[in-house]
Length: 267
Image (tube, rainbow, N blue to C red; front, top):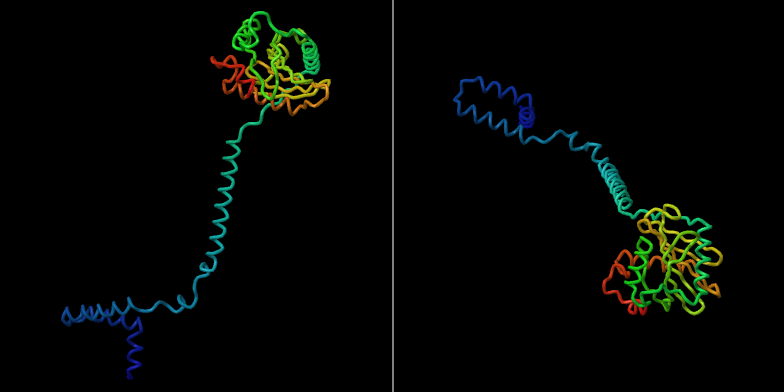
């Protein structure tokens, strides 16, 4: 037998297995038998893997990039949905919109004109500069909290009175600026209808832009009139929003014990 044939025979796993069994059963010294068996085991351990394993890599290796992309896309979709839900849940709820009954809006515009043409729009008693005292007196007379404050942008306070709108008694503050006039009405909401707290409204009636808001059960309305028609609904909405913020921040005559009408008027 040539050396190549001998090596080929020894490399045969079945031959080595048979040899191992034979050695285990022989009466040769135990130390020699154990050394030969250990050598055979080492050969089996170091033997190269089957050729198919090397030459034919698993198809899953080619699929892994696609699987990774699919998993990444799924994660992005889940994150996107979660972000959208979080933003929706944290977004402020839309403001409810109230609709003024048209007859009441027309009566409000009419009362604004009547008081604007009057030379006396002042409640007897408190001086026009003491807004805290005016607020207290109006609240005692009407039984609800009126909005008493000054306006900026050149509006001059022309006085306040308790004025009727239809058969509803309201707190009425009047302001003038050149040929323009503006009213702030504080109205008990349930006397007209039951508006929702936080609601806003805006409407134009007989060339009078009207904007306002509801706080609790009280309605606060801003009514404007100009001979040139240069007071817009957007102007009234801006003033109304500012008044609502003042009430929320406690910057009206009722909330601020050191209220200074002169300082507010000059803002």
